[in-house]
Image (cartoon, rainbow, N blue to C red; front, side, top):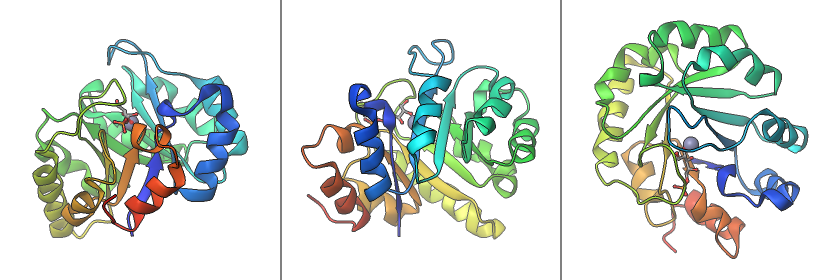
Length: 217
Ligand code: DX5
Ligand code: ZN
């Protein structure tokens, strides 16, 4: 069954503990979007927020780094309690080096790509990553419209993962909601990130269970 990773970027920061509890009770992972205002034109939040969430989280933390020089911060994310750590393909010179560094710090590495980067660029790293993060919007902001070409990108990547006999999971991020969750799972997605669909809903837990049960609501 597909795993759901609510994006805390859309949480209520004045009542963060309430939203952390909701994720603990209903979802599978905490998706933490880290933006530096340089790799992407937006700034999100940093270590104080990640550490606060970590103190109450009962599900693994999945941090998505949208920053330049991600290698500089790998150790600190490990110390903050992050379990899955992804960086953008075009934010580094040598992805293999950063993957190795993430593993050496006891975390599961993943590479993220924006919709304009061919998925084939990920193929050489499939066997060394625990997951790949396919962006279904351009990284930088929550609440954007899902890009439809994502389905074929997931299928292409899934075929290559199977061809290599690798364990690598596929995570999809951006504009995910109950309206496209089942089609994404069918295309080969293993983890669905959802920010606004979950936190802007009157009943976030109902949205999560709708996405998990592949129902359309
Ligand atoms: C966008 C972030 C996403 C974002 C998803 O750059 O990586 O994780 O929070 O938000 P929604 O689900 O609202 O598109
Ligand atoms: Zn993200």
